[in-house]
Image: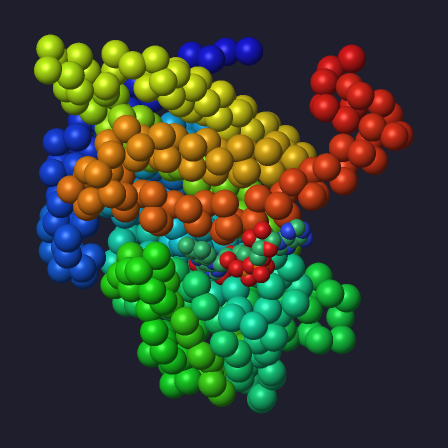
Length: 409
Ligand SMILES: Cc1cc2nc3c(=O)[nH]c(=O)nc-3n(C[C@H](O)[C@H](O)[C@H](O)COP(=O)(O)OP(=O)(O)OC[C@H]3O[C@@H](n4cnc5c(N)ncnc54)[C@H](O)[C@@H]3O)c2cc1C
């Protein structure tokens, strides 16, 4: 086992951390007290700087203009960028575009590469991923009500989706819809590219999430697809393979999310330590950090972040080595472990900041509001726990403890 971070990555991480500290954290008050859309011109300038520094799109291969980092390397970058809510956007490795780029790269036809993939990788357009439906359980995605019926050379799409993140201002959506209702459940749905200016693509609202509707990239849309007609050549990958492709999108995507959540936990931890060290709580100048209970929270938070980080990097390493399928249980472990680490650390930090923590004078309340969702999206925690436990019990009964825990020997 080698826990070293390579010289190459040390240099890259130093540059990125400096950029986050000097160029992005100062923009947070504007981000927190303004609509995202108003911040776009300034963010565009930052994006240009990132390109010039050759730090653009760290997760993308070089042929798409990215840095070509592997999953472990990009995980480290994602943690550094996660410290600010605008980090991933400025470096063009934000969800949902990062996942959409991956599947377009792998499954897209040459004309789809020209029209959608290249401008996306270049940061000229944005996209969204439209799978979850208002009236169906997202936790059981085979229950999709949205249909795409063939009519001549077109698909005609009908359905109501919500939580299509970043739909506001997106150039196109990748839509999951039932194309083959007679096929077995996991082969009924396909992915179809729908440009957002197609008649029948109706963004009916940005959903208010924890009291905020947001705008542009920082929003979650509800979309009614009403007789929305697109050519059959907009099919992404083979017909009926939507779930197979979605699975591929989710594996590495969870590493990106988990490392971003660890960056957020790290920032919350930073704010907690700063406050513990500086907040005087007695007339003779004793600080909050002198109190045992605060010290316990700091020690627990530091060790939980460390443990979750090792788990996530190990999972990234296993995906690189053996593929996402072989690492599916580790992927489930990190999904619920890191989401809950983030929740606990953010909660302790908010408690330490007291009334200040509840305001938008620091970034903490934003993280607290928006990252509660970490336990829900990318598979609710409970769904991951159910599938992992099912497998553990089966393997334990058949092969014993070591096999159930994936231990050698
Ligand atoms: C901030 C945010 C961004 C999102 N972005 C996108 C996006 O860009 N595109 C997109 O398509 N979707 C997106 N989603 C949707 C997300 O994928 C779904 O919310 C998620 O899959 C859960 O589906 P649901 O909300 O329908 O909850 P349900 O499926 O109704 O589940 C509700 C709860 O029930 C419990 N539960 C469910 N099934 C089981 C089970 N088998 N056993 C035990 N407990 C269970 C879990 O606690 C779960 O949280 C986003 C969601 C959020 C909150």
